[in-house]
Length: 145
Image 1: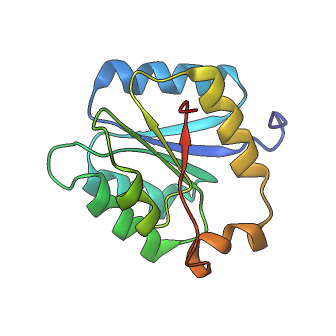
Image 2: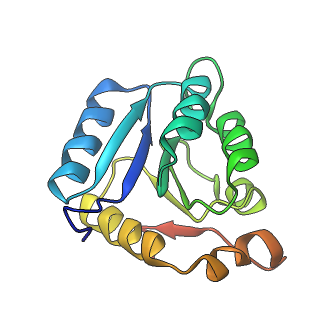
């Protein structure tokens, strides 16, 4: 859990207001600082200005979708961990090809999500480089056995 003097920052991107507010409340209760974006273009702007430690990114949004937002985010800082949250099944192959750290299908398991967030934020930068350089890298699918 982050310390109150140096809270880790998370960008939460989802066009569903209920999901967005629920995620932000859970993350803030866990000690994280959060900022919201409701579509892909706003996500890239928030990412550039806010410099988060991790990004939770929905895929299906108006305007720039999640994959388009990911392209912009990756140009700013490709080492920031990305967890894709989606209601669309079968996105693992695309996610792995784009260097996404983890993918979770809705409905979200908040305990599992919080565990993945902590693990990814605590991961050393040299380990984060693996998803950019290792051709065998596979996106972790959260909540699937």
